[in-house]
Length: 332
Image (cartoon, rainbow, N blue to C red; front, side, top):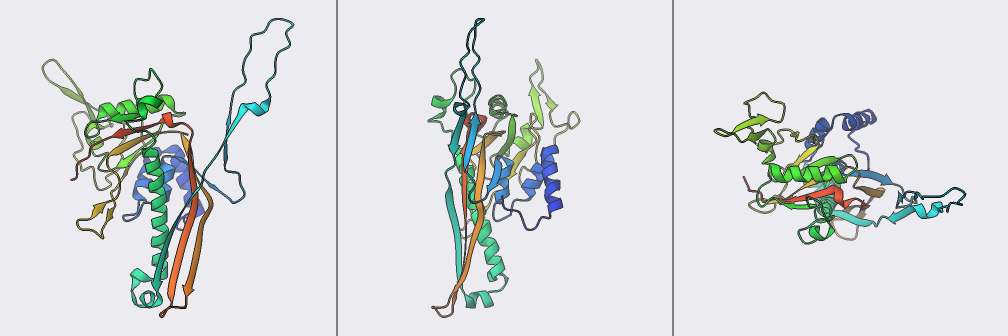
């Protein structure tokens, strides 16, 4: 991934150490790092392995198989296996997205801070990163659907890779998704990711569990708070990241809006939650972002142009380590 120019090397190392040792704190950092207007590409690293490749490197993922064990009798000459057939390789297909802005130099000179070249460049780069993130997120969200989950899920599995909450998110359906991912992925659940709207019920049911009694119902706390206490706070406004059933990397993404419409139009999907396992795939960028900046002097006043583009790709090699939960969210 391209380095953030605002972070120093020692800060980058500190974040990496934080990601390894304290997933809850790292998730809070990621949540706070979400731009109020654009989503940052760094969010991809919260739920997938990421890698930046240079031009000339091979875009290939190799999967190493196992040797077969044979039963023999004394004196037998055992058959050998060629090493070459033990490996399987898959190539990564690349896509390119670009964002471009053009303004006449009169606007740049007299448009105020909104139309300075630096501000326009920053907005164009942020728009490209957000589009790539959304492409990746939507791709993960469309792997499993109600149509294909029944066909692709292994026969005998208790849960499918597509679960329908038939309403708002519930503890029952989230528990089933976590158990499924913990079983089918190497290392268990990497993250739970969704919009604040989709994950809103988690702020309540992640705190306690109701125990049915013969005369009265009781509840026990699940988040480390003293018995009989509930934190009655809004699930919106970046109030922190919950911990639930051993999963500390819960990323609640604040909604972003298209303010060119009235009322503002929400842009992020609120109808699903993803429970993502470790090492289910990889997101790669190839060659880093490319830039082009020039002034067209033919029109009067001259026209300033800025464009940036990026090659990227994604490979999923363990789709069973990902569960999509369909939810119905309500607008506050």
